Length: 265
Image (cartoon, rainbow, N blue to C red; front, side, top):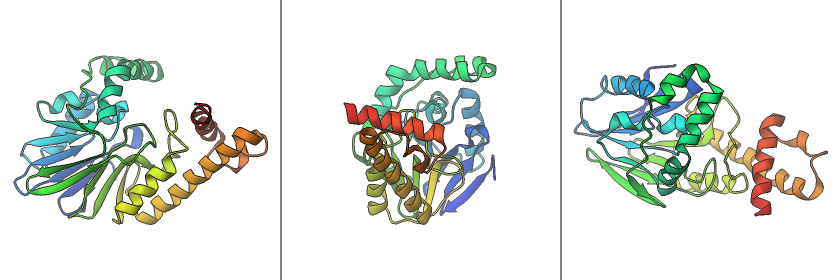
């Protein structure tokens, strides 16, 4: 269901948006304090999210960016002066590459030029490298970085008292994982670490429908196959291996390109 809040755990909500089929999250504490997970891809989209949050709680809020891709964080400015949490490399990459992301999206979606040009890029002001815990109105929410994967700065949001995990784009539903600036050789191990530490059966992907643990295990196995085939292709060549990848050839080619960069480094 699009453009509506769905409660997937006690006072834990997911809102699935038609734009990029992206998910945002909201965790509400005992005093109405809200934790907002990702802020969407522009001020206009963020304004819609603000309005939606206010249908659930009128309390103050804290923000978490799951990673530095524009569709998850270009709405940050509309939530200030609240704290915005993210991995330290999320802040660094937005400062370094944020304007390039804007330019790339204007090239890709020229009809959204005005919307994208009005964005003020605001990196997280509260950063961590491995783990952090937030008190959200008396509820403890854990932030974890398990390693390289979809990006260098993926953050998993764990709401243990509700049995919910927000995995960001470490998990994708409805489309293959995205490898544009990914680390295919590390991604399976990162996802395995998340599965090992977090036994919850409700997992919110960055895009698509909410999934269960079995779905994440299956995606881990696909990513492990990608990593193995890419290593073999680096030695044997692609001719006989490209058709064995679990994703369409353009996606497989992107994964191979990124894996080769890792292998050649």
